[in-house]
Length: 187
Image (tube, rainbow, N blue to C red; front, side, top):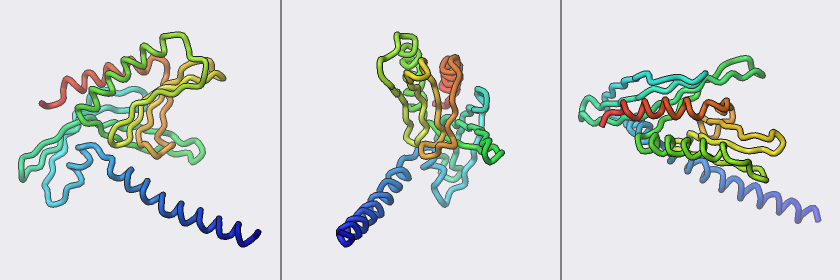
């Protein structure tokens, strides 16, 4: 019996060690166009940061990257969240980037979410979320225990430390900031 358990445990460890790097590689592949452009080597890159707005501890900027050698440009929205960790008694900075098409998708998603949370609540626990290429998440969930919808954004997908819970009015404010950013993005 002990031999079977040992063999089973070895098999599970082997399978886990084979699966985890695959998940990690998939996560690394998911990058915004800004992140891909920024990661290029052999370039002389100019970065311009244009302030758009702020909601509590989340700052929204337009980021314009220009390769000064080839004159290629890419732009998008940079989201920076300052999250305080009361256990460690320190503040951490988390950053995400949204490409222009993702900004449009997030604005539309927030509009839909605002309609959904105004309707009668669901009978069971429900989550609704938008996820960007780079892993930024925005959504809400309804918990029967709380008896209300709760909104959140998670700046970095695999980092619970970057999770920010939002007030009820946050969706409208963030939607407005993103519309302003969208109107200022270079064509």
